[in-house]
Length: 260
Image (tube, rainbow, N blue to C red):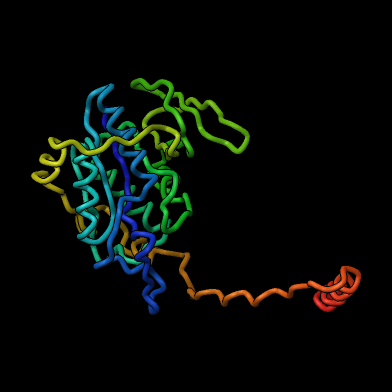
């Protein structure tokens, strides 16, 4: 069974910086980590490979520094890493990102299952995984908490809902976005670290993919941030510490003014 795991390197939550001209995240030179939800996708991909054989390929789109995220994934048990990196991809929204990743997976070729974390901590849209499946025209299940059964043709999974969970049967190849309830990610082994250090990371640019240039990066992003700003601090509230009946009258007058 061949598994593709899509991950994202995100800024450390204490190091987020915004480019005031493009209103996009500044990633170069910023301390970054693997998106926390993607750690569960990595673990599930490795577990599937351990159960059924085949290989687990981890893919990320980002600047050259994102190679470190791929090496970390390999240290956790993934077999190969593919970095999709080109200035043409910069500033991509979820539509352009999912398109580029889908084209990368087409380039990789043979796959049975694609795994993604349910969402990224820097965007919180939860759109890239379903977007990839749409571009590839394959079925997908979001918020998967357990893979019950899987064989050469189909899989049965549990997906989380607000009321509990649903059991879904789906044909392969398919895509799952997973939640943290699905497993407990392992720590890298010494052997894994040594393998990751020596691993050859394949880098793909726009010219290496069968892509339409006007669907990449900012150009291919129909949704763009117009302005980013810090909300002004809330004014201090009024404290009523006098006679209760007088306080009620004062509060009523304030409410009348607000509703006027």
